Image 1 (cartoon, rainbow, N blue to C red):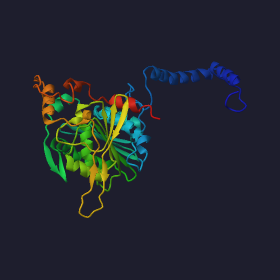
Image 2: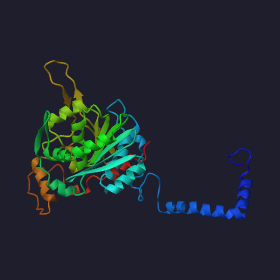
Image 3: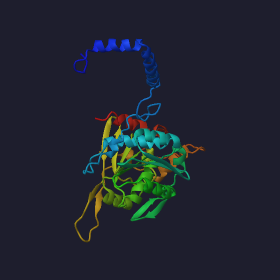
Image 4: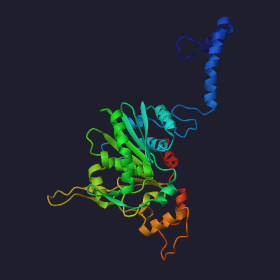
Length: 355
């Protein structure tokens, strides 16, 4: 029997054959052929819902960004992390592809933004507003031209280049957020490499905004952005709002020198997943300033010294020269390791499928 009560499946099959053999059946046949051909083509070309033609954006679920993050800032939203890994990868695509894919994912409104060499896109539905910053395709060129210039900002200093890059986008970005925002939305921010640095600056600029409900920022392979004083202020004001992923011994996460990271670190090291985070300490004394406890950072993640950084830049420049001999080996090992730095597909494979 079929799943329908009182209907024999064989009788139903015979009845269908009879109908297809009748004069009216030819019309039905043509209709079925018209439906079947696109389905067959879709099967053999690999087309699936919520993916592009190559399937590299498979697995994105907009509902993973609708979920309100846990009240416990020590709990990582792995589903949101996976979704934002894909979004930060999409930020590298041409504008038309960004719009097409984001709408396939379920976003009702999508707008890429460009200013000078910086780029981002803003996408939204009724429940979420996403800001994804683009990194740089020429990471080697970017590193070789990176300078460690601090600029005064709030209670400390910020990297001048990253801050100016964000400011070049801020006007257009602010207008687009204002156009798309709704009271019911959670705001998520993401970016890879340079895009992760811009996402961090976004939190500094918009973290206190009363008209934005910022769920959090999740970044991938980002460089350092602020000095020690500003890192402490960030932790005290925005604790639990930023999670950053590092894969293996990614050198991008160790530059520029004399700056610090903020937020919760998740480090994919070989077969391990290691979590490291600073902890805020509020001192209940009228004359004492609140502070944070800094975790012990493994040697493989410690910032490069100025000397190591300059050696790295020389090795990546077009006019590369052999590094100057040093009595002590650099803790980062061979500079050639930069060539196998962070690839976004690694976090996607780590997080997907998600239990």
